[in-house]
Image (cartoon, rainbow, N blue to C red; front, side):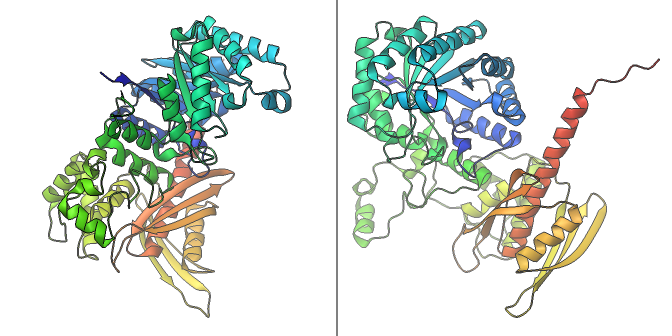
Length: 519
């Protein structure tokens, strides 16, 4: 019987540190629920000391997500560890994950401390974390560039203090599989109390070797792998959860290990992350890229027709991609739409179906055929968890190459109807100026992305924006066959998020205010 590998997902913590991948509390909660459905064993929800939003995300994930262990990151300091425990206090299975750098280059230039000082701080941190919870993980940051004798010494010390998981990170993606295998093997041979902990690895992808290094470590004795959905994370990212899980499943003959990952949830999880962050995976991304199961070359197509095994080492269904399509058009009804969503794994209530159907009929009037990609856009764009302070009723733009563009925007705010026109350098810029005026906000677009999500000349265009409002960045997304309409609604999505975040901030501030006693 194959051994079980613990999957530690850090999409909400390390993954969110990837530029453009920040998430608000509501988005983290939504992603956390999906990661639970995916079957991850440990879910690292954030770094509570980093910000109030990070603290709140960890606290809410801890309260709502019960099956996986919930981890919170903390530097090896009392303040960090106490803050992490405060966020985790209501978790069914809390884990404090504390870390400190151990390589000489980090000690000299970043920490400006001696090996002895770092060893003592690591001991003290684990001891404090252990006073709050039995489940304590310690990470030796930049372990693969750490002197091996010193690494053995620090690993032995933190296990003595009660660390139940010891993580060996390849923090800068520096190592190669044969070298990493040797590091893990050496730790298992030379650390006398190593069997008292689960040995973990956390690999970055700077040389494109994160998954390969993780597998090498598993072969050498590691039994936890830290990874992220779509491989997002600092710089070139982390080991990709979907690649690791499918490699272990497909190559059981040479790497006889298993995970608790529900592989049929992989594609849905990947798509959800893309829709939340606006960061798409490249077409040729393993497992979840749009070309991963596409075959264009004639020789490949002939082989596939004879036997799919000729060019597919796994089925698209095994990762949650459906080959068959239910054709939907303007004559389709609510029941057909609901059934299609259920086939895709989304069970919507009556109110959600009503919202989705309105968007569906509007799109079906413009397109001959509706594809699954269209339905994903309707799902993500139309059923929003953020309150819509403003909603778009109409946008009318006029553009040309000789005069400034003009745009008229009509918004609904409750029972109010607001109208304003602006000029700008292009129809989208004019539209955004009009929205700023109507909503009394001032946004600065720092990223604007358009992609085609379906086929043909009537394809749906999906717009993602990242907008800065007074130093805080919010993402927005929307889709339409009309790109100005999609751009307006994407921007308005970000505006509503910014207004909701400000409302939550003011509400939290009011809760902290102590009422003055009346005489």
